[in-house]
Image (tube, rainbow, N blue to C red; front, side, top):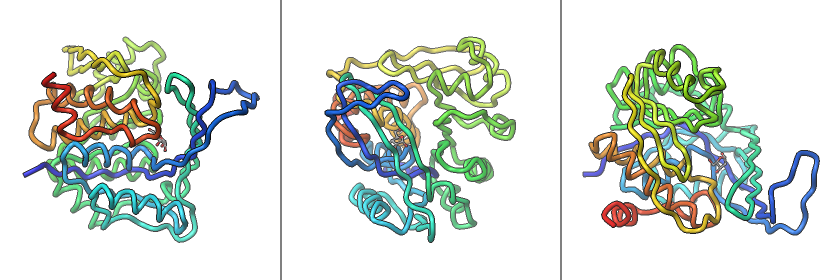
Length: 299
Ligand code: RIB
């Protein structure tokens, strides 16, 4: 029986221009190629977890518009439970403007729209409480994130907070102690200390749970109290689009933990999946199945 993951987070549609290079501030770059992809950190993470074999429920919000209908259909195609998906009566579905450069690097600006209207109700608390793992992130209001973490704590559900995009972490969150998965930029912003090493020490001094610092192709660092363990990244093909690599890491981490994997094994699987995810255009196209992840781990 696969584990269950409840994702409380954002849903966007990504409007993408693939360009010869990323523009500088104030610069216009022409000659790019336009495409539309399904996105949003929460929805992407839900898809990554579902492809990795978890049964997934998504609590989130879209607008009453074409983008919202597209986002809903994409989630349904992945077999994700959307019984608690709200349709905001006035705000549009979140949109991300993404520019992808020649090495798969990106620049993203988000108009969150309906995502900012998300607040949790009793039925959502029950859904969080019935899951093996809850996964949340920062593209929805801070109150919704905290509410999900509190509901998880009350129910004994394991919680992961991907603190992206970067914002300072509240003392309430640090006290609850979800697994945190910042990249290096999110790490320094989350604790308000610009030096990566001392930021990690400071975060661990105040945070009750483990911290996994994601480092792109280099892999990830697991820090628990004074202990540090490094997990090397897996060799990847030439990157086409790194959008969604972090989301893949988080979704697969959640799926593996929901399936009772030990944290180091879940990190290895998440690293393997992230390395596979960057080989196709769009946040979700390269996200691997459980079999594909296992093949890399066994390989
Ligand atoms: O993490 C990638 C995602 O960030 C994109 O899909 C975009 O929607 C933004 O939310």
